[in-house]
Length: 222
Image (cartoon, rainbow, N blue to C red):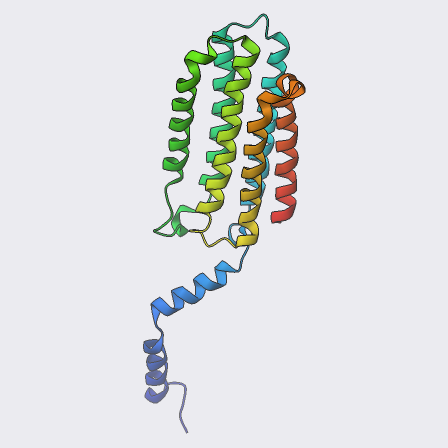
């Protein structure tokens, strides 16, 4: 008969500890996390996405209001309005994405700052590439061109977020929300200049649709 202080018991516990493979344990934990959703693995992040989506939607609605003054606004005014919308969209998206815990980020996960910084550089380059042409058309067409580029960049950002979440071991079912969002936003941006009704109210309509998408995504993720 052995007691609680029996050396044989202590040696058995020590042997059990020695049998634990840290790498195998990490793999098993990763598999468990891989079956978890975004809301389960990172509580509160789905709510942040909801706030970011509503903020982008509100910014689009405010930008749309300026279109009713298109005849009175100068090119500089449109540039300031467009830049304001871009800043809100980029900051809101980056803020949402960067709330993922950095301490638990896998080594293979890219930097969110680098990701969204690259998108800003891309948008600036794209806007500069069409700037000379845009300057030869009316204020409304110029505004549509810049906002279509901005909306398309938001769609690209959603696709990239879905891809990056693979590194965070978020399950595929939840990543599909970002893939689907990116696709519809890109399609919307591509048709924005071609329909007269969208030329006048398309940015505001995008704001409404994006806010609804954010709410639907939040419900789906939670």
